[in-house]
Length: 614
Ligand code: ADP
Image (cartoon, rainbow, N blue to C red; front, top):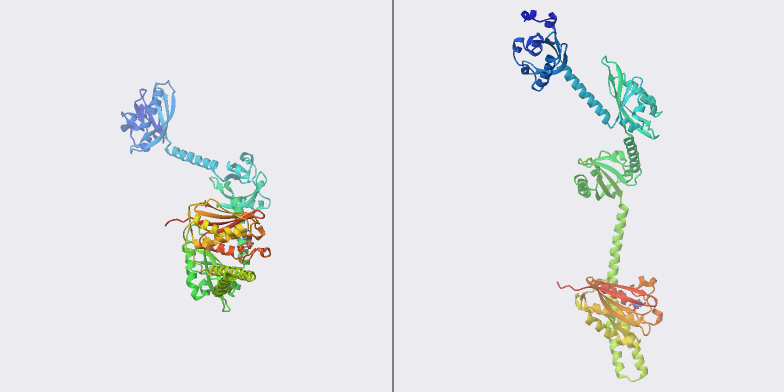
């Protein structure tokens, strides 16, 4: 190569020692010489380059641009200088990025190439990292502030405006300290200054004032940014508004304090247990229940205090609480320290463990010994009362039965005597005997029925009953009684539908209602019987135009022997008919209701299901 030195114009050792790529072309663009840097940088020697199209050594994507640049210099006037960048292929197949400067001088074309591969790479990385930093700065949900050693704000991210309420530009060039609450300012300032001295992240929470005046709680984390010589010139602080979290924290603390207060003052014993039933926490109230100081129970198994026979119940409850996550109630006995057994009722609920299986449960236990004793006493009293009731019904039913037999003889013989006597005085007296006998018999029959119903011994046989026949039959029976009082009995629309009832008992109820409608009617009044289908039931109504019943009497209407003060009117009765009718209707699966307007009349309604063939 040195041989050619003489052929190259105006170049000396510089050409051979330059670290940059140097190449000389003739005026037609033929390569005249390259310096050794070509070998060192790219691995090529002049001999390998000479006579070969330059496209072989340039990245395919850069060939066109390189050719264009070169042509501009060749074809341009003297002193034409062009600069451009392309990728040159190395001998090992890799590429280096070269920044070329090409000059046309004295008919020669000289190119100087500098390897900028590394610089470009660094530049690209720097650009990227700057872009990332800027994007983070812009997009950060927290406030990012860069301050200098005097704590003056140099840069502040857009979100800072949201947090502090001041326009970000407005804060630049000022100290950020003045918005910090005076109470917290000294330690925040100390923390900020310290950040410049240490190589660690500083974290500090403080109160500040938002531009609109309200107090905010902030948490800031910062770190010094060092110069190349290691001196800290700036520090970056990322600040977050933790007001809501601080409030939640405060509320939580308050709640916990309240909870503690509840546990401490609760009348019920509150115990926290783990899966094994070990006692983790105990409320003071449990001391009274167990007679053992709370501290002595902590760490013990809850089962230690449970009656042997109730342990299975407690174990099952614990299992249900923890395995099935269900709030569970159990009743069992626990031993008081003085040896007596306390009956308690516990309700336990597992504590939420964020989706994981629960590890603890709160159990609230109440001493129910007294109420259990009371329940027991009540139970005894109830069965005693039932026994009494039963005995009473039994007595009534026997008594009525025993009374009926002699009474039937009295009535029978008085009727026989009536047939044989012509003496009007004797006949009048016999009439009294007969009437009183009948009245007594009715009374006894009704008492018997009532006592049968009360003791649950009334038997109803439910069959399909045709209402038309039954109603006309009953009306026929009471017609005489009605006409004696100058009353009209009307039969309205009677449905063809069959009802499900006991024919005999329904007749008894109807006759009773009709008889009342006559007895408590006004002279020349009217009694109307009608039926109506309502859904799958039939309503049979007996309506009268009588005195009616005043509302304050309504609740006494079905009470046995209560005649609602009509005793003085001379209207005969026992006060048992309605009570019996209601019970009988209900025994047939129906209802008996009424409506009444004093002075206008009453309507009594039997409602029975329509008979459905099975
Ligand atoms: P009683 O044998 O007295 O008629 P009930 O049990 O049949 O007994 O009726 C109880 C009371 O209800 C009657 O004494 C009467 O005061 C009142 N009562 C019953 N039906 C009527 C009615 N249709 N109109 C007005 N009052 C009635």
